[in-house]
Image (cartoon, rainbow, N blue to C red; front, side):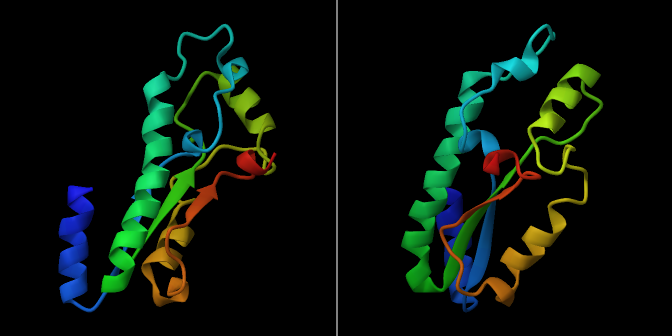
Length: 136
């Protein structure tokens, strides 16, 4: 939270601002170990509690910094395609409504939205950007 305090103070001195935390959908859902069956990798348990904690830190910082004109929100990306095992990619994609993993441009829109005045009344939110994975 110390970093949020420092950025929040600087932003407040400048009349307000927007802090955008980047978490993961894994902070919103439990693990699906079927995605990793017969593969040489999995996901460690600490990833889940760190990402879940970031959601709560976002809410805490939003409440703390809002009186100073600073909005704090989080985005929760889904899995990014990075040449993973094709079996994993196929399994993962079946969980998304859009039938694919994220690419390097999929976060741009939500970041621009949260950084701009278009989201002037949004704070304390955690926005999934996951192709529908968490809506499934």
